[in-house]
Amino acid sequence: MKITKMNNISFKRIYYCTDMHVHDKDIDVKTPAKSIDTTKFLKEYQADSDTFVLKQIIPSSADCLLSQDGKPLADEIAGNSKILKTYENTPVRDFLAVCQPKTGNVENIRQLIDENPDKFVGLKFHPNMSELPAESELYDDYLSFAKEKKLPCLFHSDRSFDKVYRGAKGEKYPVYKSLFSRPDQIYSLAKRHPEVPVVMAHCGGPEKEDINACVDIVLESIKKNNAKLYVDISWVGIDDYKNDARHMEKLVEIIKKLKNSSKGDMTERILFGTDIPIARYNGAEGTKIYGDYIKDISKAIKKEFPSEAEELTEKIFYKNAQDLFFDKNWAKETKKALKMSMPKMAFMGACVAAIGFFGYKLLTLNKNQNNTQKNN
Ligand SMILES: [Zn+2]
Image (cartoon, rainbow, N blue to C red; front, side, top):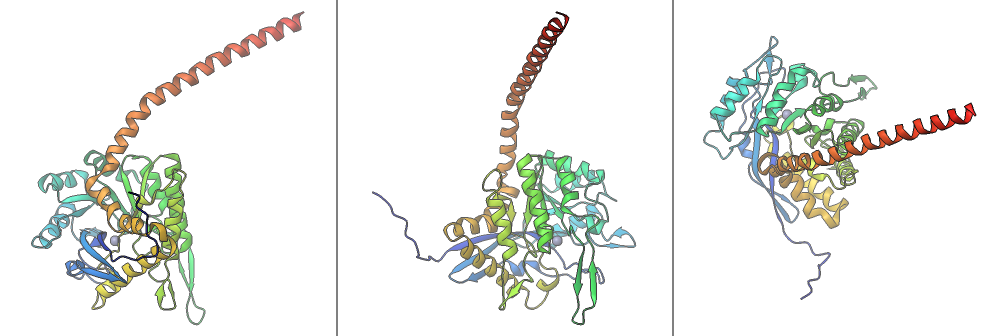
């Protein structure tokens, strides 16, 4: 029996969501971090006829990121242990372990993970807040450990360019490119650890040119196969209003570029993350703003990619994170690719050697002939 696909009929869909970029508290550099119950976000959100069920969040410790007098509020053991207690009697089971390469030690993270198996599904780094450039070699031990344990690493990523904002009266507010967390700095580190998935949070945003620079780096790494880079979309397009609704032009661009990478569709590298409960999410309207953001993303995908909207929505909101943090097909693929490439590389090496040898022979033969001709 031939089954024909029906077009132009919209079915009610239920989409699962995993928010992979969450903190246990708001992070405000001026005031001590405020405690907020992030589990209140674990609910259903409506987007037209579709329902989005936020199934899981993956929080990390704010105390490990914040510092006082140049010292973190909590060290790697204290802060990361505390977050397990915070969520003890909640549905939240998975966490990112915050690493402090400047003041800490990877052995702390090893101890934490050994003592709390299956709790930490990845590592988290904030080069800006640690004031440690992402390309520093102090990160290397942590990424080697991530490779050993097959843990993805989430990096705060930030502006690649300076920008001058204008006030209502034309006042200038310059903001400078990041000294520590630019995508090009994260890429330098990721290239030293090509088997470790490295997620660039906020896709290097917020501005369009910053996001483009970040995506271009992901595309280059895909083409050269020299790093395993991902992006999360937290804050992407959240302030871009048009007629009262956010238009997700920046997100659409990210999807378009990754759909058409040199290796084909690589939209598996895009993750749904939000940074809750920071800033506007921390307030009475927090979950409403969150729901609106989900709705706007869903709308933009439906409008721009109508024939693949379901698949893309599933991937970005749920499946990509499911694979990255839990199923880890990427780890199996890396192994397979390496196994395949070893004999291939040996064969290519032999070919190069053979070409070199015969080329040399041909050259000396020609030279001898020329010399003989000249001598004649
Ligand atoms: Zn964050």
